[in-house]
Image 1 (cartoon, chains in turn orange, brown):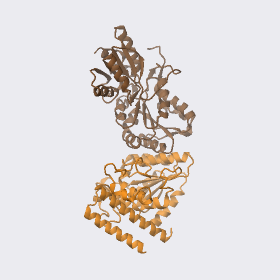
Image 2 (cartoon, chains in turn red, cyan; image 1 turned 45 degrees about the horizontal axis):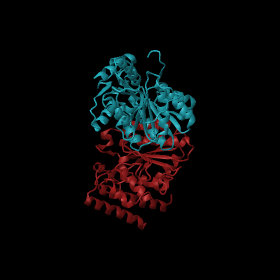
Image 3 (spheres, one colour; image 1 turned 30 degrees about the vertical axis):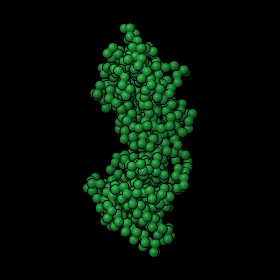
Image 4 (cartoon, helix red, strand yellow; image 1 turned 90 degrees about the vertical axis):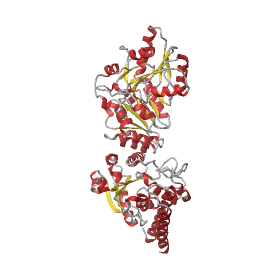
Length: 281
Length: 311
């Protein structure tokens, strides 16, 4: 990745964060914290990694993405809109009655959404089914799924990981957004997770642990994950919840709360300044 | 009916899957470490590369089926009714029902006739659970021919389907060569004008026997095989209510939420002055015992149906 390409990705990530604020402010609800911690990986996936075509969302042979942590739909929608799947101007209709932008991802209404999710622990199993199906068909397509760290407390996640390893789903890449915070507080206070990489390794995954805000590191990890043979891969992203908006960073209270008008203005000013700074590079 | 040939519909399920697999390469079968009991092993022997054991993880299995269906396969996810409809309810609801994916659920060991395993495995709530999911087709066959035809019809249907099969042998009622099956259509097995017995699953044979008993008492009982609980054949229910004036629903399921309540809702909606007696498990758990003895003890046999028909 050239420096220029990295800057372009950072600018895109900034726009996706603006989309997250716009969508949750428009909705007066939603989950900005985990959308912002994952904004960089959404950027990397939709602007670098995934073989997709916004003009043909259901294209045969496309890579699939399943947002297992479905509550961070604002981040996914902002990325899809920025990538051209639907108008960015629609983002403020998030969660409104009759809007196609449902509170959690809906594959039947939102172009580019490959699986309806929202109930934690299920998306990763669905991704396993997709990976199995594509593998059986001899497709070169890959399947990516993003989980929250708190989501790892769902027992079904581990059923799915056993399945992925058992069926040698090397076309499956499981991504964990490890921002350390969940609704009731830090993971370690709510229900300790121990070492996530160790647990994933014990379940038979090829594990990479990197900063979730470093595009160069992501390139290394995603490229290496693609080389995994006979086993699924996992990328543990060390992230900051609320990343990019100063008053939200590391604050558990912003897990599922929308910014009010004043907070929105402040956040937008910060992100616009970050974008202007990148434009000037 | 001791001299009648009996086939457990779980056996029919396994055999039908094998036939379906031979005709359609997109059919895949999932099981959760119960292939020997659900009889999907019959399919597995014929098509080992299209049978996937998910281990003892029914929740994962349902979502894997959902994911598989998005790649063009038609998965038949199989387990006992208790786990398919019960344990994995929310997975079926959110990952199969909500996106209306083309997944078929084959649930064996439904009802109290599971027998010796006892209450933990005797699922009498699955119709209620599955009926409550928008767009879900819910069915339970009376015998071998109907079970096989149902499995094939489920493949042709686009969208989620729940099918309940039995562990206990069901008397063969239908002539497999002449039988045709349509989802959502009930079948009049015996004409009658004094009372209509609307049944599914194992209780269809009991209802037929009850009609014989009633005939000996001078009561003309119509017998309807209502294999599809949802969408319900409302026209056939209304016709029976109008022409017979009295209904008895018969199912190996809780009287709450199953065929009985579905029939009552139709009668109530149309304001018909037609009493409905519900034969089913009366809001209680089962217990261990031989299937036949349990059916008798829980009031699910021909004699009980005939008695209910009297009013």
